[in-house]
Length: 310
Length: 259
Figure 1 (tube, rainbow over the protein chains, first blue to last red):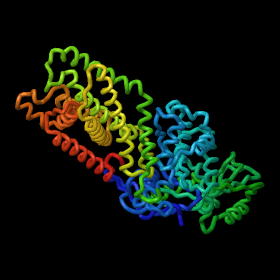
Figure 2 (spheres, rainbow over the protein chains, first blue to last red):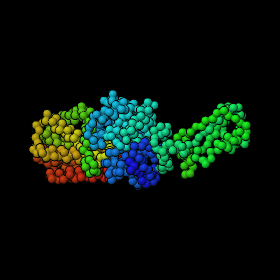
Figure 3 (cartoon, each protein chain N blue to C red):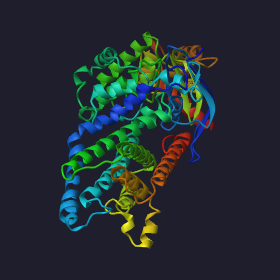
Figure 4 (cartoon, each protein chain N blue to C red):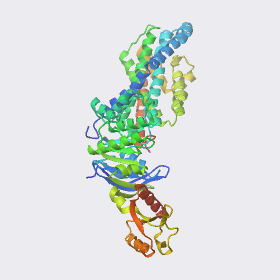
């Protein structure tokens, strides 16, 4: 059974703006799921509905089998949320605010657990510091510590690395992997594609309130990835022979490289024809290599494609 | 804690302690301010003016104003504490944590309103103790005095909670306490018995709900009241029910809390 089951979920705000349309989504226990989408696509609305902050217009959400409306206590107890905004109680100390979060979730104080979290997030030395004295990166760590204080089974990270430095980003990725090893399901929204590429097991793409794709990351990249074949020519050329015009080749490195972009999803990649054509044109090469396009390229391609259809 | 109906007491305790923490962090200001203002009231009304005012209903004027002074602070502090307590997390965005936690509306109200009422009761008792330095205190019905203190603190903390949910800016947060509650308290007989007013203004005063609170509270002290004690109790209870109704409506509809 999925740890989160979303069915026919829609949200229209009182302003009339429809943020989500008939979302169906299942998140498996223990996976890292990245929800990608441009700004305003509905990522945060979706998270906020699952966490109880926004009321859905229609549809159902089950968290670990518990309905978020009918059995909200059990559903919410399973969830930890790290919000996008750095919202903290300026005058509170780190230790107090993290302990407060644990109390909100109905758990007895556990100083040992809180200490472990603070140490894992390099916050232990700052435990008595007031939040207003901390840097943005440290505040982000505090929000993560608060979300982990009640030992959630599902962790939502809403734009976790927005505006954080490289060190914290690396720390966060490490932490997410450790959490996964402990069986925690992690759902992150991001528009940093490399974040999803680095961490996610599966990727969902949301655009204008609709899930337009859910796929295993590796399969997605395999299926949707465009590849580039680069041929290192023995002799530089100044122009592409007219008989090879159909291949839309590009010249690079002062005519020493010929670049062919092809779609791995296509029935025929055209590579055989290209190589035959090159031989016929008397163009010889001494090396070649291929490059897989990044997830970012895939994402941009997808969003554009869907945009053109809309 | 496995069903939707069992109470999440650790959460109530967490909110309560969190809110009381703010009070203790600013304890100097929280405690000193009412002591100084009470002292000033006694200097002005008790010593300077009070010496020229005859006893009211047989109660020396300095002593007569004690219940009104306590009520004045109780109302303003209850509203201020509760409204700020819930408004600030909304303003700062930290309300997300309350909304996404396994807490029922009742538990949220218990935590916030309980803390606000506790703070104002503490301040009320501090004013009472300060008053004892100036006048020989006399409390004829101490249990009723505590009862009125509790009832008023809880009722007006609930009212403050509603204001804190309704307000969408710091200006609105101050609007009702400054423009409605303070005038009603001053005109509600804090410093005089409404029986001292001409008949027309006496009748108008009876439309002021604060009159019933102060009258009932004063009865607990001196055994004398402007209006019947049962009516005072009834009006206070009615206001409590209205505030409870408003809070319930807000949580049911998510008004100002959820989009």
